[in-house]
Length: 163
Image 1 (cartoon, rainbow, N blue to C red):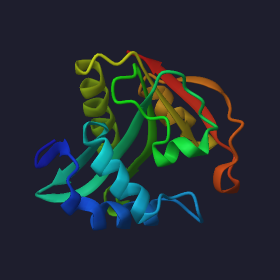
Image 2 (cartoon, helix red, strand yellow; image 1 turned 90 degrees about the horizontal axis):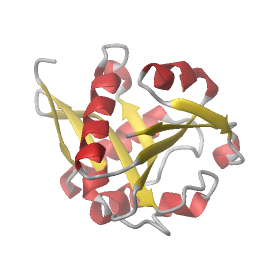
Image 3 (cartoon, one colour; image 1 turned 90 degrees about the vertical axis):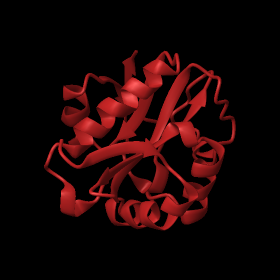
Image 4 (tube, rainbow, N blue to C red; image 1 turned 45 degrees about the vertical axis):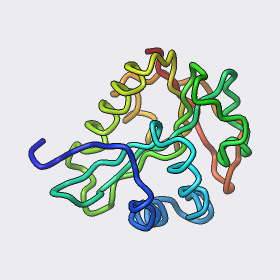
């Protein structure tokens, strides 16, 4: 798409990424500024931003694990993260509300999957709300199960894609 670029997040993106995250997740489901800063600092290869005409409009951030336990809330703090591990766990996929419905999330996810493949990763896992299951299914993700996680009091659904 014209004007849309992708790159690894930088510390200078922190405020904008936090703003988008805070507006995208209700209640306590969104990551704190401190968690986002840690994810940028400790795993920049797993944190890709989408820019439209030079402004960050969305991002995906993740960690890597040898064994994926989606209900492990400590992993959101990157506890147990190993950048060499073969399995990617997405923590956030967000597009600024002003830019939703334009296909940007699909293109962002495609770039993220390409990046994971180029890094030799084997699988990508995510949790989403029920209403997003069809969206991720269209992107090639398989429904795994209703998650044991009730993070932020929400019912989550686990999905994965084999690379």
